[in-house]
Length: 286
Length: 332
Image (cartoon, rainbow over all chains, first blue to last red; front, side, top):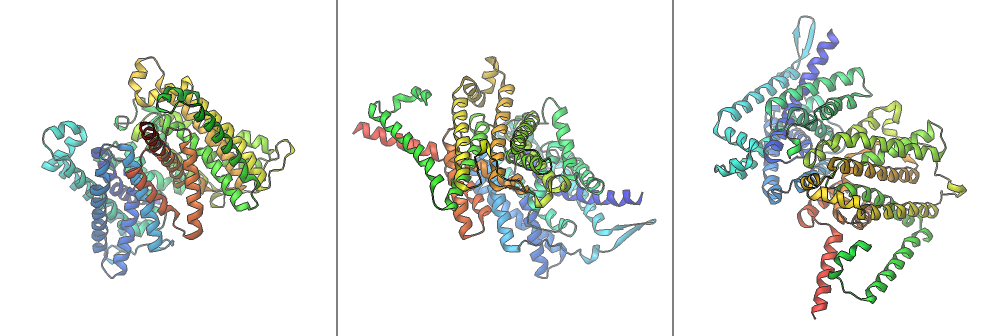
C-alpha cells in the first residue's frame, strides 16, 4: 500500500511535468500543424538556463520565470524567422525543427558539459508532508499543484477569452478562421511562444526531479508524442489526461518491470493505433 | 534507364551522347572497383561505409522519394537486423549464414508490423508514429539489458566466410559490400521503373485518383514499407559485419535523421540521389570528426540549410543546371 501511494505521487509529479511539456506541443500541432520536434530540446534548454540562473545566485522561482522567458523568446525567433518562411510546407517544417533540436542539444552539451546535474529543491518547498503514516515530498505535490493551475489558466484563456476563441477557431477550421479576418500569423507566434514558454518552465521545474543531462531532450520528446497521440491534437483536457496516464504508466512500469518500462509506455499508443480503424483523431487529416 | 526515353526530347539526340554515357558507366564501374585495392585501410573503410549507407538510404528513398512517406524510424530496421544477427551469432550460436537469414526474416516481420501501425496515418501522423516506433526499439536495446547487453551492446562475432572466401581484410569486405550494393541498386532501379513503382508514384501524387482508378492505395504503401524494411535489414547485416559490434547508438533518432538527410540532400525520388547523399554525409562526417567533435550540431545546421535553400536535393539540382546549359548550348 505504501509502495502504491508513493509511486502514485511520483507518477502524479511526472504527469504534471509532462503536461507542461505536451500542452504546448499539442496546441502548436493542433493550431499550426507543426510537429515541433524541438520541443524536448526546449524543455532541456529551459532546465539548463534555470540551472545557470540558480548558479548566478537567483532564487528558484526567478529561475523558473527566466527559463520560461528565455525559451519563449527563442521560440518567437524560430517561429518568426524560420517556420513562417516555410508556411504550408508541413514536412519541411518538421525537418527544420528536427535540425534545430540537434543544434540545441549539441550546443547545450558544449556549454553545460555532459554530466547530469540535478537542480536544487527550493527551501520553501523542501521537506515532506505527512498524511497519516506516509511522507510525501512537498516539492512533488507543488509540481502537481502547479500543473493544475496551468491547466485552469489555459482552460479559462482558451474557453473564456476572445483570443482563446480565435485559437479554437483556428484549430477547428483554419480557412474559415482566416476568412473571418482573424490574424492567424499573429496567433501562430503567440501559441508557439506560449508552448515554448511552458516547455521551458517545465524543464526548470523538472530539474529537481529528473535532473538535467544531455539526452533529456530526446527522452522527453517521445513522451510528448505519445501524449499527443492519446489526447488528440489541440485538445487541452486530452493532453492533461494523457500526461497523467503516461506519468503513472511510466512510474509504475519502471518500479515493477524496469527492463520493459520503456516498451510498456508505448503500448497504449500501439493499442490506440491498432484499435481505431478510422485513424488517430485528426492526425490523418494533417 | 530505358524509361528515360520519355524525356529524351530534352536531351541532345546523338550517338555521341550514348557512347559518352557508356564510357561514363564503364568509368564508374572502374571507379567502384578502385577502393578495394587502395593501400590505405582508412580510405577502403570509408568507401565501405559509403556503400552501406547508400544501400540504407536507397531503401528509405523508396518510402520518402517514391511513396511520399517521410519516416523518422528507419534506423529501426538497420538496428533490428544488426542486433538480431549479433544475438543469433553470439548467444544463439548459429552459423553466420543462418544468423544473417534470421536477421533479414525477423526484421521483415517487424517491418510488416510497423507498417500496419504507421500506415494508419500519412503526412505528419506517419512521421510521428514512425519516430515513436523507432524510439521503442531504441528503448528495448538500451534498457532491456539482459537481452541486448544494454549500453555495452553485443560483440564477439566475426565476419562471414561466404563460399570459403575470407572477408576479414578491408579490401575483400569492400568487394563483398560492393556486390550487395550492385544488387540493391539493380533492385531499386527495376522496382521504381516497374508498373508497381509507377503505381507507387501515382499514390504519392494523387492518392484519391489512384483509389478511384481501382488501385489498392494502402496495399501499395504497405508493400513498399516492407520492401524498404527488408533492404534496411540488408544494410543492417552489412553494418554488423563491418563493425563486428552493435550498440543502442545504431537505433538512435540521430541515425534515422542522418539517413533521412542523405535521401533529402542527395535528392529524394531519384535513384542516384540517396547514393550521392550517402557519400556526401559519410565523407562530411569523417572529415569533420577528424577536426571537431560537433558532428550532431553540424548535422542540424545542414538540415536547416538544405530545407531552406535546396529542398529538392543535389542530384535534381545539378540535373537542372545541366539541362539549362545543354539547352543554352543548343541555342547557340
